[in-house]
Image (tube, rainbow, N blue to C red):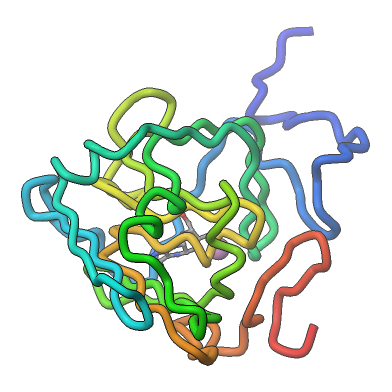
Length: 201
Ligand SMILES: Nc1nc2c(c(=O)[nH]1)N[C@H]1C(S)=C(S)[C@@H](COP(=O)(O)O)O[C@H]1N2
Ligand SMILES: [Mo]
């Protein structure tokens, strides 16, 4: 039988890569933005890390690309229910950026900010150990602007709202400070495997 894939969807087989309460979005990559997609050229993009660090630093497009390239190949999970398998993001590991600024021992949390004003908070330990990236490529091509291009944060082991699009910077703090969704009832950490969707989960 010749049916359109979009009509039938994928067979609902058990997928061990799917966190509880999530479904496989298949080829779709939904756009979820609280704000209007900004008109941000690579030449206007910058990324700053400040707060509790030894040496606050700002990178531009060129100096960020001079850091060692690193890719993420894997899955992403949105708190609204969709997961997407086998995505490939290219950029630089956050470890490389953090090595330049040298976090102070008192730093425990991070507030990530977008060039649009969107924010998300994360424990610092979720951004280290090769588990977080600043990315500018998707599938080997420039990251589309609606998905956060020219560059976004990607922290794939947490719900995707933590992965701030149009990333502008990280501020290291000695306490947790709720970001945009966290002030609106979402979980401070957001681990999809523990279904930490809402505050108190
Ligand atoms: N600046 C900004 N970053 C953001 C968001 C947003 O609204 N603004 N939405 C978050 C949410 S809820 C998700 S699921 C992902 C969506 O990324 P996508 O639109 O590329 O799928 O971005 C996250 N980062
Ligand atoms: Mo989301």
